[in-house]
Each structure stands twice: as C-alpha cells, then as structure tokens.
Amino acid sequence: MHRRHIIGAAAAIALAITAVAAPAQAHGRDPHLPDLSLGAATTLASGLVSPLGLEVERSGRIDVTQNFAGRLNGVTPGRGTTTLATATTGQEIGAVSSRHGTVYSAQNDQPHGIARLMALPPRGAARQVADLGAYEARVNPDHVNQYGFRGLPASCAAQISPTGPAGPASYHGLVDSHPYASLALRSGVYVADAGGNDILRVGYDGRVSTVAVLPAQPPLTVTAATAAGFGFPSCVIGYRYAFEPVPTDVEQGPDGWLYVTALPGGPESAALGARGSVYRVNPWDGAVRLVARGFVGATNLAVDQRTGMLLVTELFGGPAGTGQISLVAPWSGRVVQTFAVPSPGAVELRDGSVYATIDAYVPDAAGSPQPIGKLVRWSPVDRHGHGHWGDDGARTWQ
Image 1 (tube, helix red, strand yellow):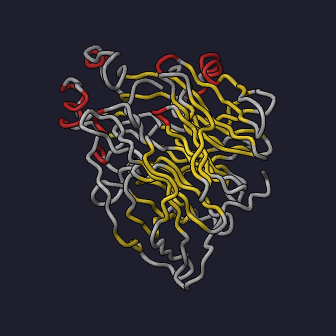
Image 2 (image 1 turned 45 degrees about the vertical axis):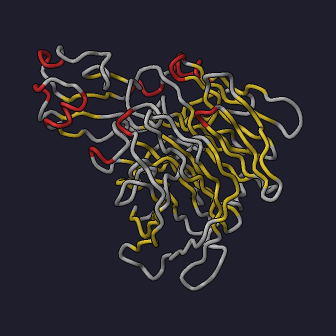
C-alpha cells in the first residue's frame, strides 16, 4: 500500500477525545440475542502510551503493547506490571498474541521497511521468527489490487503529485509492511498486516505465506470538499476513488474462519463516512467475505466462541466521535448494542470477562498520544442477570 492516513500518522485523526460514560444502546432488540450490561470497569493498569494491542494469557497475565512507546508489558492483577520487551529506539511494538506461554509480537519501523515477528518463550531470550518486511519486499501480495481513481483522464492524473498525501492518481499495491495484530494457533501465527493489506500465516519454522489479500475499499465519489482536503486539482471532482483496506486485527470464530477488522485507508474519522469493516477470511482457501461495514476506527475485535457474536472497538465511534465498543451479530452484520467507551484500542474475552484498553489514542496539541491509556476489565451480565456471557478462552484449536 502507499501513503494513507493511519492511526498515529496523520493530523486528520488528531481529534480531541474526552472520556464519556453512557448506557449501552440497543438496536432493534432481538429477544434471542444477548443483552449486555458492562457495569463499572476495574482498572488493571494506567499511564499507558498508545495501548493498541492486548492478549489475555491462560495464566491470568494480560500482555499489553504500548505501540508508539515501543514497549510490551505484562500485567498481573494484584501483582503489578512488568516489562516483557522493549523495541529499538524509533521502532514500534504491536501484534501481540500467545500460545503455550510463548508471547509473539511484532517490532517494526514502517518507513524503513523493518517488520519482524518475534517470539518470547517462558524462559530464555526473545528470538526472531520471521522477517515480514523481507517477505513484503519479495512478494508484495496486494499488488493484485488497484487503488486510487477510476477512469480519471490522463490530463487530470498528470496534475496529481505521486508524493502527495494520497499517493499517485492510480496505483497497484506497493511495498509496505506494518504488522498490527497477530493470532497464534496450532497451524501457525496469523498476522494482520496493516501495511501490506493482507493476512499472513507464519509457520513455527519461520515460513511465511499469504492467506488472503483484502479487497480495495468501495470507490467513493470525490466531492469538492474531499478534493480540497487532499490537495487534489478540481478536475477530480465527480470521479471515484478507491482507498486501501487496512487490517487491524485477526481472530478465529467458532466456525473456524478468521475474523478481521479493517480501517478504511483514508481518514479514520467519520469525515468521509463510517467506512470501517469486519471481514471473514477462510484460512484454507483465502476466500474473503464482508461481515459488516459502518464502523469508525475499527481497530480490534473479540469473538464469542459460544454464540459467534463480535465485539468491535471503534476508536472514533459513537455520536460524539469519542469511541465505543459495538456488539455485532455475525450472521446479519447488524450492530445490536453499543457501549460508550473512551478511545478503545483493543478488546478481548476471557472466562466471561471483557478486557479492553481505553483512552488508547488521545493526541495532545502536537498530535502525539498522551500517557493516559488504561487497561480495564468488566464482568458483564446478560439481560437475565447471568454472568459469564461469552468467552474466547475455550479455543480448542490452540
């Protein structure tokens, strides 16, 4: 993929996000669907910088990435926080997952093509599992996608700078790797690459393969305001433009398919509409199916292994654009409940509890994330007063 707005990289998403608290909203309540009440949150850690990745270990430890600070921390409730890994200065840490006590994460420097999947065993030093940047440079899976303008006259395309904020007038996927999320399963570690626009599988022997390439975003018709915002010449008004998909999480559902959240590749705010998506990806043949669309800043999701229901974090969602978590029915793609949560970055289900990072990306006046992120836990109940709604902790395939 080429230059586009992504979290932490563009002033277009430097929104003034403030903490809000509001009750969940139901959307066309179906009596057969769960009706959750999160209640009061328990804060497990605070003072975090851009906590955009989260993994809840079977041991009870919660692994949290402070992406732009280049730190991976382990939080054990009642016992404090430890540092598990620190990236080289200027590099990001993200894409955390675990299997059998080994923690997997990515260290990357996107502008310089550095993207490495690392493994930290329960004992011993961290090691590199795979060089994802090298794989992207060699294979560039999304070169099959065409992005940019559709049908734009050559005379107009010639007026667009290829180094502008949206890149060339029209282009195929370019070399770019930004491993944003991972999922460690028996068959390997699946990686959502927000730079490559694809889902990769990394074998435990280090071999990398492409599972699926997400499709280009549905083309939008460029208005005068959009053209001005991107610095396009007026001749583009009325033509359609296809942004890149930006996968931000990967989880497995009870049907065995992978579920993937995706940002829209342009402004991640609602400036061009609520364009974030959730896809289903067949891990065996790479088929991609749209589950739902209409999210603002879809950075993460959790899947309930009993019902298949999805929890989707919307970093800039909600009426005020300050963030929400949406409960989505996977068979219809319908949002059935929303919870006002300030700037949620990641969400996980474990043993009937919901874990999330909040205030995850709240920029200061200069656009830098503030150290105010928190790791919180809710013990939700359903509308019948039953606790332990849902779980992703019984994944038999791990």
